[in-house]
Image (cartoon, rainbow, N blue to C red; front, side):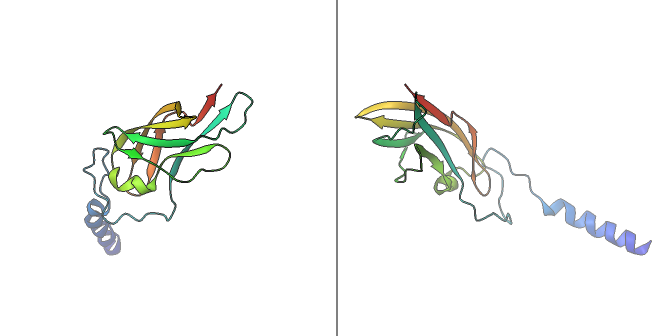
Length: 135
């Protein structure tokens, strides 16, 4: 009985301090959070009417504040990066609006809005089309 009461007392002392709520408004704390070594990336695939991958001449993502983010890498088969964990520090415990632009022959052919959030460790896809058909 004494051991049970001691264990209960210790649990009650530790429990309130063991977890802190992470809020979505940027005020949450990430102290003590252990993250994986994964590198999160949100991408989209662009195809034509025949289902073939489309190669853009340029692509970039614009934040809601007007900043332009460019990624040098083209993923395989018409896949393009919308946002990756390199932007995570600006999105920790927040949600943001982003617009992906795809350019062919000096003309914007893709304009796609995305909502992306971040937790203490990685960015996370919320909404936006991840497969675009160019006729």
